[in-house]
Image 1 (cartoon, rainbow, N blue to C red):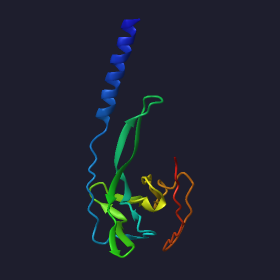
Image 2: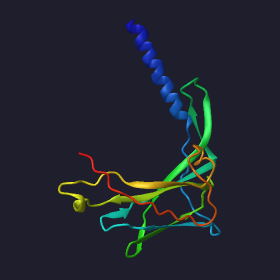
Image 3: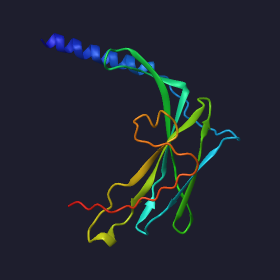
Image 4: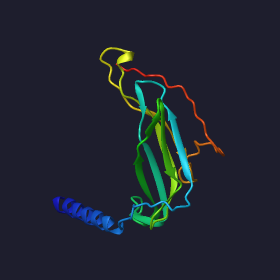
Length: 173
């Protein structure tokens, strides 16, 4: 029994090491071309106790594909690569924060914009009660291609998009 367990363990280790060698390093550097279009993100900070968190921007490449081994049947699966970068929001005037995101990330992998996550987070909760600590942030995910919107929870919008949801604190004990 010990020999079989040991052999199975060694086989799994070898299989795992082989799976790692299938993926080649993807060049994640981006260099937006001069003629790229830009997405302007603007957040109006609702309170002195909150601030916008940095944008999480996801680019996709169909040029530089990644390969992985399926856990189901051991076959090799080829799929697009992703490149997630963080872009800080810049405070413009008072409670307005802005950032620009390139629609075409460029580079050797020809990165294109897939999705952007943005939102606000509490930086101080003193006004809500004594001893409270800020928790998680709230926000929205914007999809720019079919890959990012494949779960069906998105609606199509053309032109400018203005969101003005009301955020309420959620206090847990």
